[in-house]
Length: 336
Image (tube, rainbow, N blue to C red; front, side):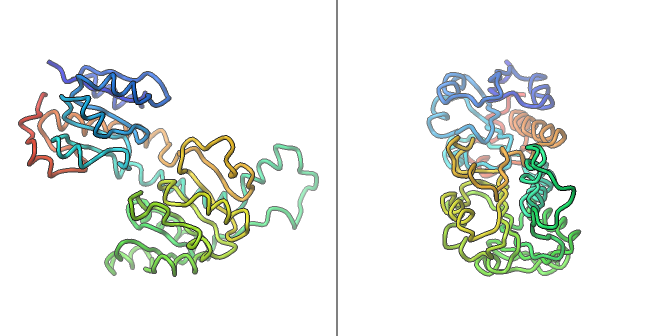
């Protein structure tokens, strides 16, 4: 009997094609995420689920799926999955790190340039037919990236990729993380370690690449924002809740910092009445850090391969809970 798989969204073709080759696949046929009741109704007899970061896979979902053997998320983030509960139940968890690194780093730098140089406001200025003088020395003064100081919060895969891009702009690069990287890696990347507080005080531009954990939730709060330069630009392409948004809105409106560029938010999509829409010194994007055709196809493919590997009795290419094998060995979940 073929394994039964539930896919919570229409995803790019590589992943679906791979799954359909050897599994009985049920897809939530929408670009919208399924309602919780839809997940609970569809998961009952499934052996695997391919989900996205918008899908909460918690104890109740697992309870409703007694046959569940593997959860594969098409994301590098995994805060939407109760890893401890899944491991306790012997459920394998795959995820998709690495393949979205370069696309997300590109987006972070694009946001940095857009926010610092006021590109979105300038574009609107032209589109709204407000451009009346051929050239003016006094409009849309931004901040120059060349030779500035960039602070990177979280020197993981994406943080390192951003550092490499910043070297092309002749920037001084500071970073902070749970612990410093080895000296040889610092030299290779051209980065200098600083405490979070010192990084915020010193940097002209700050970009966040930290995972969302209990420790990092609202890591950038009012106190931290007031440490930054009044001309500084803050970029976030990691997770929205790393920043206290109420404090950030106050910072942007009150001139504590100069600008911000956000691809992620505490609540997504952004509420229609959000004060962000009243601010001209923030660039707002709809969580598109990994959104290139090539990257999303690779994420889809890797999510499917992770799921299929577990059902073949093999280690997924990328998995979050390797110690689950001691609770339920591969021989107990092998179906292919």
